[in-house]
Length: 140
Ligand code: THU
Image (cartoon, rainbow, N blue to C red; front, side, top):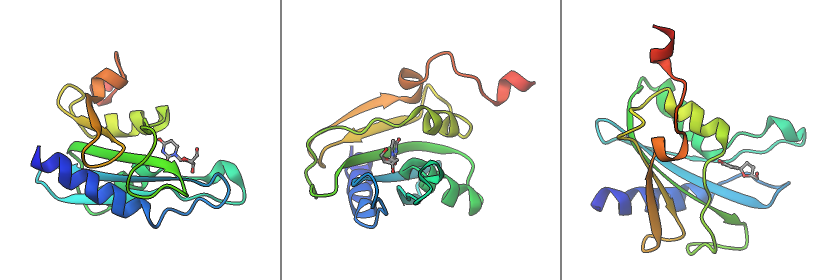
């Protein structure tokens, strides 16, 4: 439970720097490695719209770049840029982010925390959100 609050707070903090001038929808994420280190991320949009990167994959790729390749949880927060620390709705991860996270976790263990605030959140496993997934084992 303590980790959940810490992750949500880091996701909210990360969201502050989101670069979302086109959608106006800012997302923050905080990803925890198996050793307990936390990487924040936010969405980064481009004038060439299809090039935008989601908050979850920003956090994931930062962590993988630094040598981490196994994770236990991610917190995600998102909403219109006018909203700050209390958001009006949950921001579930897109399909591409679900699959990217799948590469680096056990789907039955990995927790996806969707939050509106540090007090208002729900917790899923990655398997809940991406059942019958394709992963590294399928290539063995
Ligand atoms: N977005 C994320 O950052 N994560 C998701 O999982 C879904 C969508 C971003 C992408 C884009 O910058 C904005 O939200 C609106 O789609």
